[in-house]
Structure formats: C-alpha cells, structure tokens
Amino acid sequence: MKITYLTLFPQLMQCYFEDSILKRGLQKDLFAIEFVNFRSFSTNRHKKVDRPKVGGGAGMLLEPEPIARALKAVRQKESWTIFVTPVAKRFNQKDAKRLAKREHLIFVCGRYEGFDERLIEIYADEVLSLGDFILSGGELAALAMSDAILRNVPGVLGNEASLEEESFEDAILEAPAFTKPDEFEGRKIVLEFLKGNHSKISALKYGMALMRTNYYRPDKRIEYEK
Image (cartoon, rainbow, N blue to C red; front, side, top):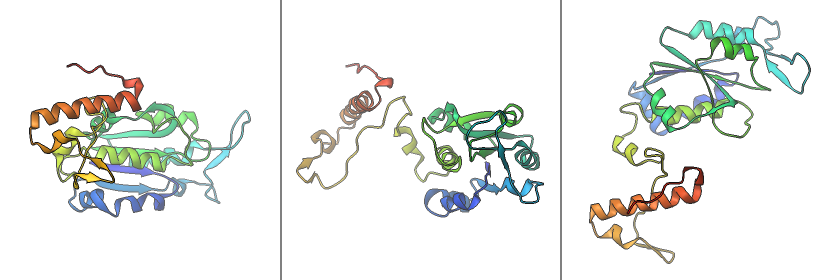
C-alpha cells in the first residue's frame, strides 16, 4: 500500500512516521508514504492558493487549480482519492478495514475555510470526516485515519491477534483490561481474571464490554443475552 498526502504543511505530518509501529512498518516496506505540497503547483507568482468566497462569507477558500494539478500529477489507475473535511460521513473502523485493502490512497487535506466544491465533485472518490468538530486543517484527521487504516495492513502490527479484541470489531467497545499487581491503590483485579478459566473470562469480558458500550455509547446500546 501507498499513501499520498496533499497538504500545505508536510512537515507537520512527516514526524508521525518517525517512531513506533508505523516507523517499523515503513522500514519493512509494508507500506509507503508520500507528501506533496500543492502550493508548489500554484502558478501565482506569490504561490498563493486561497481566494475569497464568491458570494461573500468569512474566511478564504482553497482555490481549485493547484490541487487539481497536484492530483493529476500523483493519481494513478489504482488510486482512491479522499477529501478530508468536517462536512462529510464520519470515518469508522469498518472504513479503516475496507481502505486497508486499497493499493493507493490519496488524502487531500484542507485548510482555511475548506475546498472549492467543484474539486470534490470532480476528483473525490470519497469524502470523510474525523468527527463533529473543527480542526485547523485536515492533516491531523488524515493522520488519525491513516493510523487506523495501516494497523489493518498485514504485518504492520507485531501481534495481529490483538486486532480481534479491539473496540468496534464486534460493534462494541473493548472490555476493561488489567495487569499486575493484583491490587493497586485499593482496587483489586476482578477475581475471575486470575483463575485461568478462559471460557468464564471470555464471557465476563463480553459482559463488561457490553456494559461499557451501553454506558459510554448509548447510541450503540446492545442487550446482554444470558
């Protein structure tokens, strides 16, 4: 897999791949990354890429030409272009698993007041949002989505079995987990976890996961079947 980022601030994004799991994945050639500053595709003598909105309104808008030229330079037959914007479908774990199967993802990261809508109409294969809040730009959102996607690329995680127990794999949040010592600041580990009966532990974890889901995410409420 390859991921290309179209951004005005590649330096903000590059450092995310310099440590931990994603750094090891890069070193093993499990995926590749590319950063393209679409300002370099501007024909404006001052390399400006923003203009006032037609019809009025606060803030500046990214003009279409530089981004279109950048996309034409990096897109290939297998490319899948994603515009990152808060006015879109919310990204989720199913999207992460689905997009991990793509050969080439292009994330177009917005700034200012967003994109000229014609860019999305012409070039977007998909439009995604990280959540119902506003960031200064699309870079953080694109990195968060990329992290979730790349975890599902074979070999990137050291122990891929851990994917099976993560939150949202069965539409519920992951159950609480514990480590040693058995008692910490007056709080003890649930006794059943220490007995080694894996079927009982599994059932207990499932029940705890349901309770956590129903508490934190009532929109996903699931009834526990005894």
